[in-house]
Length: 132
Ligand code: SF4
Ligand code: SF4
Image (cartoon, rainbow, N blue to C red):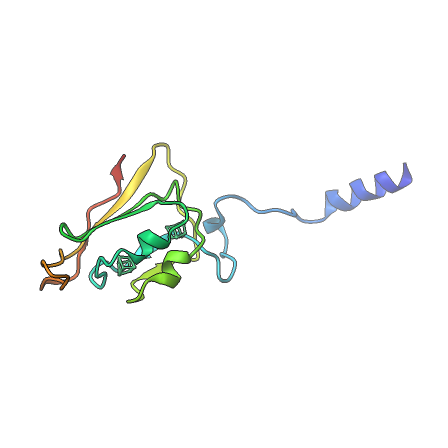
């Protein structure tokens, strides 16, 4: 009984052992694997990230120059970031904000020309998120 009371008192006056969600409220942990970013102007639409993704939450359409990510299926493992040959993928140190509806992130870049070469043009623009 004495031990229980001591623990209760200690916990009562000690600071919180957890912190609020989302962790963007406070400083993120170092090396947090958060929201995925694609610098779409550098993406070659090679599809390697799609093939490596264990959750199958990525889609690439080279002919249309579209890269699509389903953040609700993503497990934030970072495998795609490691796999990308041009290093256009990265992860923020913060997670995505909660959402009330499921949505996918669609990024529009420069379509690849037939034969595999990427077409001329500037950096792509973000067309998403789009409802799924
Ligand atoms: S691996 Fe990189 S360059 Fe290839 S499609 Fe994915 S994001 Fe684009
Ligand atoms: S972080 Fe992992 S699960 Fe998410 S898109 Fe990349 S490879 Fe797929």
